[in-house]
Length: 327
Ligand code: UFG
Image (cartoon, rainbow, N blue to C red; front, side):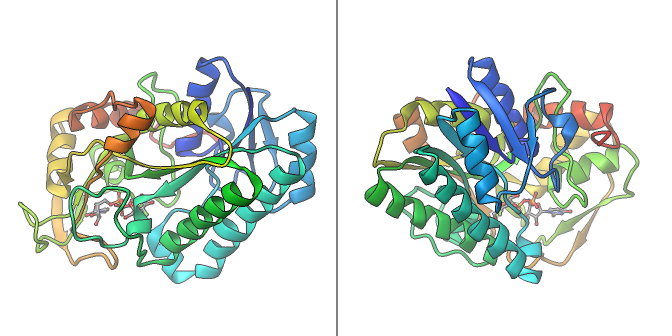
């Protein structure tokens, strides 16, 4: 297929691009490089453009005879969405609706969408199946839920075929070591802990140790970014007109903040000083996926099951690229 990967120069997108190319698809990357990196995508495949630019998207889809679109171009920081919700609604909702309209005009009806565990809010059950009511507690989660709802309506009315993939905590890097996570500023746990190991930060602050979890710190389901990439490829192959697939992508295993720090100590051999700080607003105590539906629907089985394996791939990337991508 000819696939347009919108936001393909970002963290998850760039890993999906590699997987799609590996499977023999013809991939074009559409990205404005506001958060993505030129160095994350193969030479000659990048089209620079804005998601909100409908006419340009129509032109690109027609010129390259696009069969399917994967959409990774979104802002994805909970805190930032609380501080500047307008930016989130504009980029994650309005621009995405422009993209969907452009697809209709260009007669492209296959769509794989990056959704999130943040659409569930604080579900209070673990693991979380897809049938859990979606009640987001921040603007980021709402913006993703709005698009999930739009997609269900577009599938019913226009025959769209789509998958909404609800990621838990994307982590790790391609074991080849040449693409990985590079956010500025960085707010995610594993890269921050590894930056301590590299001497770029003095210590990591644990945001709260009074949660109702085994060791008092928050529990998350860390899923390797290459496993996410595999799920995108499998979802693309299973798309059916008029039908939507909403799937959790996680390992089903919870890991606490303390356990992540311990894993980083083992993998890097660095002591990694840590201190306890207050809770971060909006952090649910525990988010662990029930991913049985993805296994049943896609035959998807995560390959990276041990946290140390995930952290090792992230460490390789950060150690070899201490300043991230050159551009
Ligand atoms: N944490 C710390 N110290 C840090 C950074 C993070 O203790 O310096 C903790 C957080 O409080 C949280 C855990 O580490 O408990 C993981 O935090 P991340 O920021 O790495 O990831 P989140 O779980 O907050 O975010 C992820 C995705 C978001 C998504 C969110 C849904 O990155 O896109 O899950 O809850 F919205």
